[in-house]
Length: 230
Image (cartoon, rainbow, N blue to C red):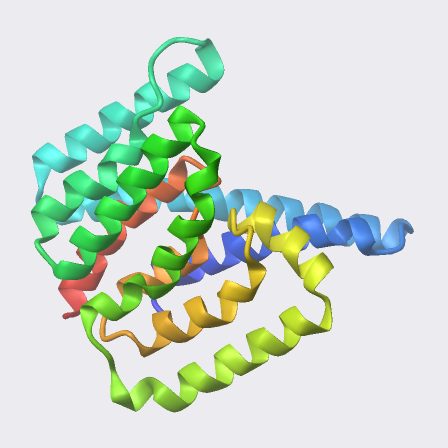
């Protein structure tokens, strides 16, 4: 697992998953200290992802894309903290795909562009259809036959966890991934691991509906990381 993917996994696990799961844990001094640790490590992971995404975009040599990422992120933060500017970071994965020029980057760039636009328009009725597209998009990059066994095992474990408690798993992942149909998670995990590209692993941990602005930066930088690995 590369460092970028590891940071995203930590942010997903600590900042968006265990953070929500902790409401079901009995409260005592020990669990409170552990909860604080989870929160802070998750928060630091998120900040590290911000910085590392910009570092990767800068390392790619695409100065125009790097400048656009800085501008859109600045406008996004200004909107959140100063009440001025616009939230248009959802444009970034689609624009970055024009630089990486891979089939999978184009596919996910288009997906998150549509998802972000519909979210701004409040078109929530389209979400279930988008989730099916998100789950199956990894296959557009082709399949990696050698990964079949690993994909099946991870998918089976994910399905077992979901079936053991669909209600609680649904609550966790609707907040962690923006996934309203938790039974799609095993399919999405299988497709991401079976895909010939590593890009779907980043999209899997981001989810079908972006929860944090930094995730658009991650998706943009992931296109560069995936192209470099290929």
